[in-house]
Amino acid sequence: YATVIESALERFVLRQTSLVPHGLRFYGGTFSETLTVLHRDADLRALAAAPAALRDCYCAVPLRGCTALHDAVAQFVQHMANDAAAAAACNTVECVLCIVTDGADNSSTRCDADGMRRLLDAKRAGGGWRIFMLGTDDIDVRGMAEQRGVGRAAALTIGRTPTETDAAFDSVCAGLQRVRLGQDAEPTFTADERDHAYRGPGGGSATETTTT
Image 1: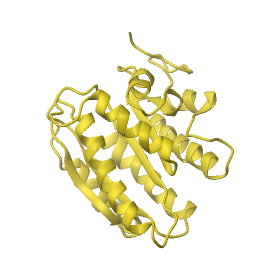
Image 2: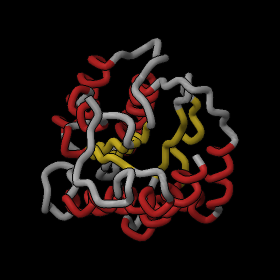
Image 3: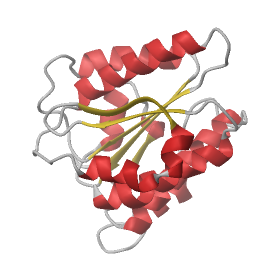
């Protein structure tokens, strides 16, 4: 949490407030063993004005060693979809879902991998959803993303240093902007972005590393 949340996520949140002029809402939580919803439909600009509070609420959640990835994605997609539908009557709504995990699911009880894939496939097909998955170097995050509806191109292996995690979230920003500008149809990462997000165990760049 300290590496990813305190440096990278905080910068990501602050950057969105400069890229999007209005109407920013934030959803966030953790899924260590069970889902903990920390923010739902929160004013992102208000959170950005007090970044320490955003950081502290994540750091206060204890780590339990298990991962409820599928349950978390299903719940947040439901929250975002319901709130977006209510807002769509007067606004154009874009939903950005960024999943960050250091392990495969081993504790979800309400949604499995196939359910997550069907859910995200439907959202991507319907338009307006930008979905990313970031994973640490000890998991095959691109394989997980492909099997669960995120898409292989939208998955990124991230290192464990502040420099690497900062670069990873900068890459999410860049990929998101390319979609917004019509340069890419869906989120993807360049070779340089992949190299900067994960420098490899010896410090050298690695365009892609997976485990089998």
